[in-house]
Length: 228
Image (tube, rainbow, N blue to C red; front, side):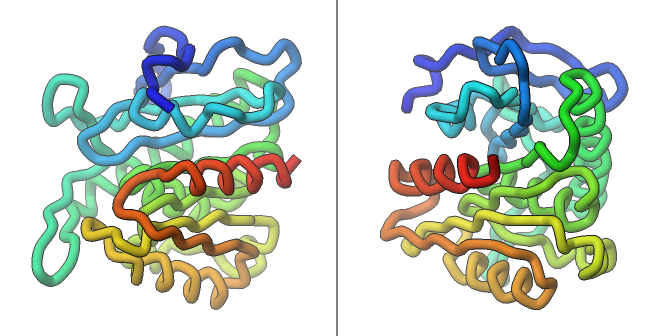
């Protein structure tokens, strides 16, 4: 769905974390759940808004904007370069964004009186990377995460929570089999890692490239609805 057809509120800035964000409209009269969505590198909060189409009306949907700006309406969570040996990131930026997002989640939960047990974080590409990083290192912050066309950063391995802390976490992993930006093997690696960590999850592969297909969107909506 074209993001321009969706109704998102004005840009706000959360004062403690410093992140800018929008809230999908209309806000639920009695919010019961919270879903934070993260865009990919070079996008903005409206780039991920289409994923909110069809979300249950009792959900507060938060579209967060990456803290790094590369150009007009172009933001990111960390800098990355794609080399013949795979993606190369600026780990300090990824770590700072991870910490900021954990704080941001806390502030959103406080604002809407929604518990972590009724909160999830999900994103596309770099947004999915950050969602996985937040959830796996701070599982007390969310009940689940969505990794759409992304990967789990090896750099977070020392910070990943224990199996005992991860028992309440659930994940949705989705990837295009023809993805040339982040090859599908990253999804298979994530699947194996989550298995090893004991994290309940589902793996969905599609005959598509680097993007969110209609089928991926539908499966994500089903996953979210099942978390109710």
